[in-house]
Image (cartoon, rainbow over all chains, first blue to last red; front, side):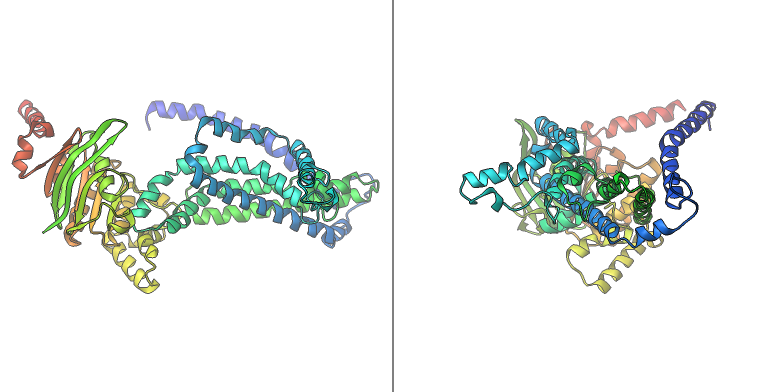
Length: 297
Length: 242
């Protein structure tokens, strides 16, 4: 190693350590402290009404059908929104890539990202509600007799309103991600290569475009799914009380008048964090086994 | 026996002529090395022959017109400067890619890919992902992936341009050996004089969209555009100075 390189490394090391300490203090410690607090609360070790170590809150939480329904609903909806967003984005990029790269179109794709989820939920309510714009439009066109005949799309048992709103919020982000990765991965060259190797259009779409892009965007897509798993404002406004998405359920338990529910709420929060951490750990383990020495997109 | 015949290939883009009535023929099991500076139309020439770029003119392979066929049906493989290994597939699956497109039965596929891995000297690397390979190994895999489908013609667009000097020389030797062993007909474009002379059985020079094919190496050396005389004079002057 040259003297200059050694000097540079010597200067870089303390900076690297300082950055790590800064990250641990501001990024990891508050979250870890919050999680430890929640674990202690769930075990009855802290809290106003707690009297000492107990597993009763864990028993209540783990045997609660509402909690498992909530976790399943949240995970299912998050995976569905991410999957549909990805395939829609892929379809759009394949069909419309030259148009999507135009400056005006590209800028307009960023606009939904500036929309707060609560505002998006209100907009969806205005459009999809029983007396909303779509219902009134359908009534004006004579498609339905009364606005009551309009299908229930908000606070509905199938979470259609929540799905549509999360999709509208999520899709532009995924579209920009896929568009960017399409260019970065040099997909055009791969398509040419696969064509000369004998691949037809369907094979190229499946074995080249889809396979390469999914390989590149999957880590980001999984993290975004985790983010959707904890969605709060949209399901709070457009979802149902039962089953509720996990963040809404935890919020319900925290804000109840019964203070005995607070430790159960903390238990649900710990379970929620645990499920996410296990999912992320499983994903990264699988991902590194699939693609060693690679950085996420 | 003549394998490739190109007649009056023409390409222009935004009013600028890229290729101007290019015509030439290539014998089977021979390598045509085309030398040319950057931007002289080398890549366009190869892409038109592969069917990846539109233009006018006629292309025959084994006496059959192929210029109206899509790339999938020409039996011509185009190799880029980058190895372009599929990042989600390991070495074995990258080499097997073309065979899987043809839905070859698994036992025959395994036997063929294993044989190719042995020829490439990559048997121990079969399960590695592209990120675990060196530049030279990646290029070998790219060659294997192309050769395993037994293309009628191999087009090489500066395939060793990204490699260091030593690996580049090794890959040139490797290609020469494979070309002889597997009776490959290939066309290579490069801006590297030494590479062109080393690799080509036949030599050409592309300048401003015009291709000139040389009958003999001495004609290639005599043409001042190829830079061969300047190169020799340079090394001679070094030797004299020493």
